Image (cartoon, rainbow, N blue to C red; front, side):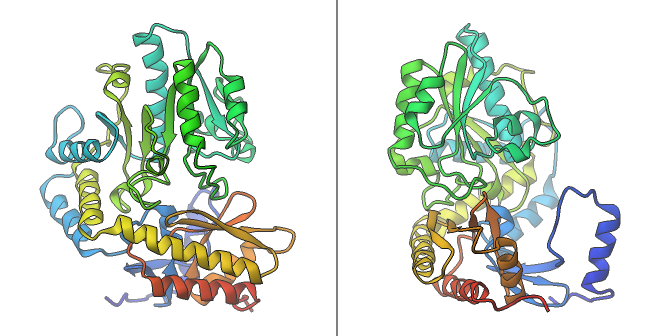
Length: 409
């Protein structure tokens, strides 16, 4: 498909800057189409997409099975609200239950909304079912749980809080990976622990393999809930359906979004039968949550992952990507080692030696898209369909950028 260009890319960027609110700082490129692991801008330049819509486009761009399912569903039914049942919502909920620990599913539109639902359920379960005045959450430093008010209050990165105080009360933060610190702050008002199995926005930080098992034991000891934010790690991103499976533990509540529908907005909160008793009719809702279009897309994504064997592919290609990043770190001053799990990959960067923003710009100029994470990492989240050779191409471009190529004249 050839896009007819009637104005330059810079013209379109200028139009956007006149009408959009200034809370984003997008790179000066306008994408018009995509295919597989590639994106194309208005000037038909091709880019390897290792940003993936921030870990969203798990099947890449233009996957024919997903595109056809979305088009077919759009012709049939887009929205009916949760005043009625719809077939796609039921089928996606059944599928999520079948591949997870959960018994019940609530659908919404984003990861922040899924985390809000998880936190509301945890409090309401404690107060209406257990009849206990438990309302506090223990979270981790460097965490990220979304941009709504309670979600940023749960987020353990102060720069996300600036200008939004006072925050929602009831959130305590301790060092990520530190079980003793977690155990020490839990009191009779604590209702849940909320953590990410791997911190994505915090810098692609994976804890010790025993960490999640330790959290489960702490939660059980104190009779509180364990909530895992799998918005970025879930739906196959780490090589298993959910990252907590690597540790052999199960939470009481889990949040999902990002890759669940391959780019169509959706979020989901999954929980056990017991904890689901915290919700009653009218306790929580989402107008667009679980609409037929998003659920058809989500169901299709899960089926494609299964049919194409993408979980094992993610594990293999992700290991190859991290090995390449580790090898680069042995040769490039300022790189501090590979991070992550599966195709949620990162490489540590010493900010005193390497300007991450400059590297991202050079990579873009050379045809590779990637993102920053935390204060000291570059993050790579390519689609699950990425090939080993495309990973090698991306590593080659990154090395060229680190060596000074690709600077804007």
